[in-house]
Image 1 (tube, rainbow, N blue to C red):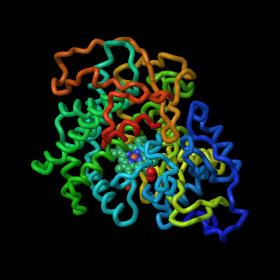
Image 2: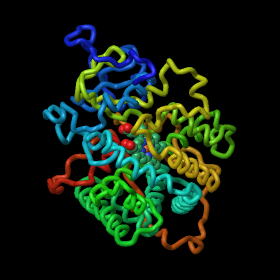
Image 3: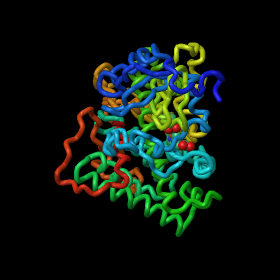
Length: 465
Ligand code: HEM
């Protein structure tokens, strides 16, 4: 089940050598965010698996070794992906409003399914993704990127995460789902409102629910050549409820990591001497920057949460049945056991897209979108530069994402001929702006009704708490 057959074994009951006394290391907060590599080095001293805290009081084991990570990711007979097996949550030790729940709580989608139930949902997703024409995808991506650049180009400054990298995937999804470009403002506005928090979040939740429900209803009535219709007509025969959840998974799983891949690669291209500090003047290619980020700053830093089906020993540490085992895709990629040559540009053996049965089904699409986003920016605003020194850029403090809070840039303003644009791409500028995530939780809004918001996890997913 692993490259090393001795890596995972069932310990003899009560064996003291397998008792883990190390105290958990926090995987959150500004200190962790400032230098996760230091934390991974410390954890590695305990071996390839070590205890961590994902949020105050939320305990997990973190896998930092590359081969140990592969052992977990490729062993579905030993590790479940279903959070309903999470003992501490089921037994009330982790409160249902813990900040990790939006990322770790169960929802009926492919990511949280095992065995044949997973195969059925995943097959519908992969077969539908396979039908997406990469040339058409490139076309949508270029057009969407140009639309966004038109918005900020006359200003000579922009915040590239909220105004570009985060919105671009939404415009593309809207198209892939088979909706008109004009519908994308419903999606963007819904998510922007969710980010506002408070009473706005309630409205955003309702808007998002309506967006996916209308999408499913429309495509049941009038199928077309689009992802929604392909998912529906798949032999897996997804119900409307399943359609809602798989479309939501695609949006959630597809937007945040793409935003962070674009953001982290732009940071590298704009600030690293090897890239000559400018998008146009650098000697290293965009592809090389994407490879480097996927190895060294992968957008999903720690995720791929698994739950042991029974007590099991991994790398000398006992993993208890039902305890969360989080794979550090970032630490595994930088495992000192890997040779430097392996991490060179062009080698795609990194774990940024995970591995095993739940490996990301959209790695090619994700790379394509990120590459186009950077290419278009380079082409349209060649003198773009960071508006603050690189060491003043802040990383978001949550355990799961490797994401900047903002990416402010400046450049020579460019006048856009308004009359030459496509009027269907007519989003209200305010709908594009999402507040940057900070380490300070929003105060609860007393005006917000206590009603459960069905899709509100999306905002937390993005915010990466
Ligand atoms: C740079 C961009 C991306 C990165 C780094 C990334 C990374 C990942 C990772 C690490 C997983 C495994 C998570 C786990 O096991 O818990 C995953 C799963 C998944 N990703 Fe991506 N992803 C990216 C883009 C996308 C895009 C654009 C889409 C949709 C078009 C997408 C759809 C999915 C889906 C549906 C799954 C669940 C697969 C399953 O459970 O079988 N991802 N992704």
